[in-house]
Amino acid sequence: MKLILPLVLRGRIEAEARNAFPRECCGLIEGLWRGDAGEAMALYPARNLADRSDRFEIHPEDHFAALKAARDNGRTLIGCYHSHPNGSPVLSATDRSGAGEVDFLWLIAALTGPHAPVLFGAFAYSAAGFLTVDLDGPFGADLVTSSA
Image (cartoon, rainbow, N blue to C red; front, side, top):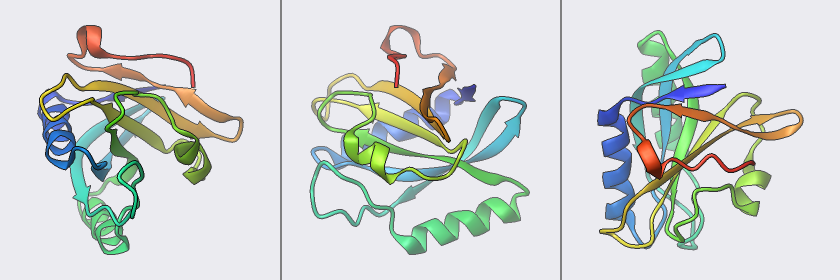
């Protein structure tokens, strides 16, 4: 399984992660599935309702607006993204407990400061747990593909 993430969308997520630091940013990913590849085509930044800086909770109004926009575009929500201000682009225990939709992608943008490099990790929820997802795009050395 892989996620195709265009450079312009990657840049938007990086900017959101930097702007939200030290809190987590969050949002939803609109796209299409082509076989085992999810192709990201639009992002929907969301308000983070979480009380703690190391958590995210997508505002329900933002979630419903993204669902409607994706449907109007003839696409679907294929995943979510959020930042980890602790610099670790791997799933947290909270991330693992919050998942429930099979084949839904989780993209993590990790950084240690508002001007620090952003590392990406991508995962998909399955009945057996989370699977590591390959990222297709100009990621170079900053892509983390540690096992989920």
